[in-house]
Image 1 (cartoon, rainbow, N blue to C red):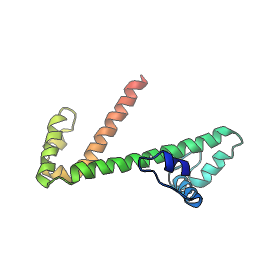
Image 2 (image 1 turned 180 degrees about the vertical axis):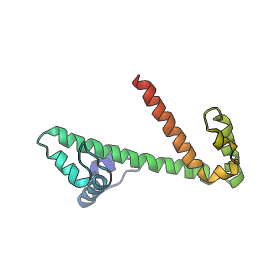
Image 3 (image 1 turned 60 degrees about the vertical axis):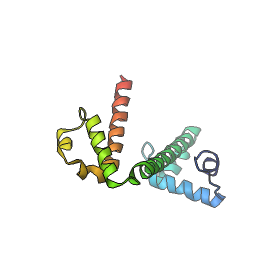
Image 4 (image 1 turned 45 degrees about the vertical axis):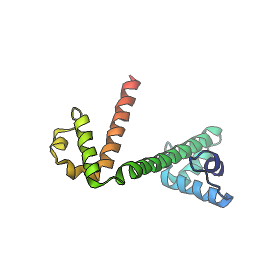
Length: 143
C-alpha cells in the first residue's frame, strides 16, 4: 500500500508503515470478495492457501478496489469542477442537450419529464448511461 500510494496515484501520498497496514486492512475489510470468502479474514484465508495464486488473488483484488475508489474520486471531481459549479440555468440547458442527443436510446418516460426535474439527478443519469454503454460494449466484445 505504501508503494502504491507513493508511486501509483495521481496525487502521491507518503504513508507510514502503520498507515499502510491500516489502509490495506480497510480495503480488504470493506471491498474484498474472494471465490468463497469476503473481508479481511477471507483475504487472509485466500492468501494462506499454500501457493502464490492465493496471494496474487488478494493483491489483484486490492488493486482493483483501489482503482474503483480512485476512479470514483476522479468522476466526483469532474462533476464538481465542470457541472456543479455552473449556475442552475446552465445545468438545465446541459440536461436538455443530453436528453436531445440521446433521445433515441433513453426511455420515453424519462424524455417526458421536465428537464428541470433532472438537474439534481444528472450525475446519476450520466454515470448510469456510461455504465450501460460499458456493459453493452463488454457483451458485444465477448461474442
